[in-house]
Image 1 (cartoon, rainbow, N blue to C red):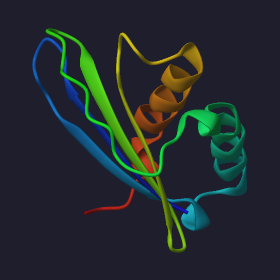
Image 2: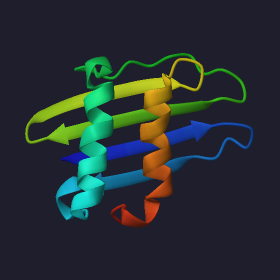
Image 3: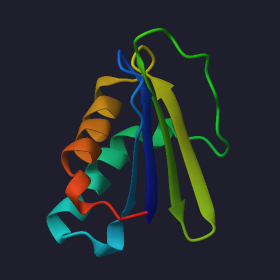
Image 4: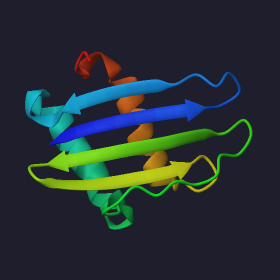
Length: 101
């Protein structure tokens, strides 16, 4: 699975773009991603949904590509669940495993 993670906004309006290929990650990280995705997968959509940004909050835009299937997650700090934040934190904390774009 390919995962595109984008975090934008916040106090400094700094954008973070990360791209992961789960097939190239160590097995423990693959398992962690699968476990985190299992919790948030019911909230994924078939098309991107864009929400109006709120001042000083992060906006998260994720695309999950598995073969020909794409799923999307578009939320901000105010609309994201704790489980979503766990997923976002995982990606930022493991940025060293991201693909170079």
